[in-house]
Image (tube, rainbow, N blue to C red; front, side, top):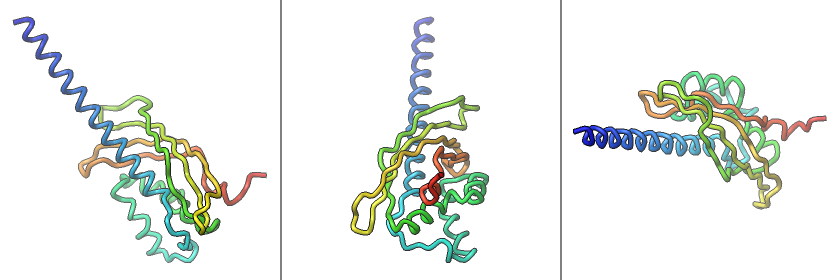
Amino acid sequence: MRKLFLLMGCFVFVVLLSGCDRNVDNAVKFGEEFIKKLYTVDNSDMDVSKMSTEQHIEFQDGFSPYLTTDALQDLSLKRTLITPREVAFALNNTISVQSISLEEGGVQEKGESLYFDHSFTLIFKDEDENKVDEIEIKGQMTIVNTGDGLKVDRYRDDENLMNRLTPIK
């Protein structure tokens, strides 16, 4: 009887552990999708300065499947969502994302939030598809499981992409 309880306890532990790994794997894939959506710019013709307020809102709302309401508001106010398009337009470059890495970090609360340190490489290409620049971005994000599925609740990069336009003197 004792062996049966021990065996059942081990089975439950393994099932719970594999479920946690699947949650982490899903969150990693979701985080990668968000980073690609945020930074990939296939067409550098979008002049953000000429967008109407309605166009800005519509563009930013395109990120709502990825972000909690608070994160959408925060990243919109900080212009994080629109910055890659501004930079691509100003440099007349496309931007692609490579080598995305998300690693679990920090303490998790109640099993609802997953904290990640992320890094990835942005590749800038001119209109002839020649690589003109490459930068590595590092930062952190928190992904939560909401009633609407996974959402990024906090996102921060250590590098401000706007610095590509205004070199530090």
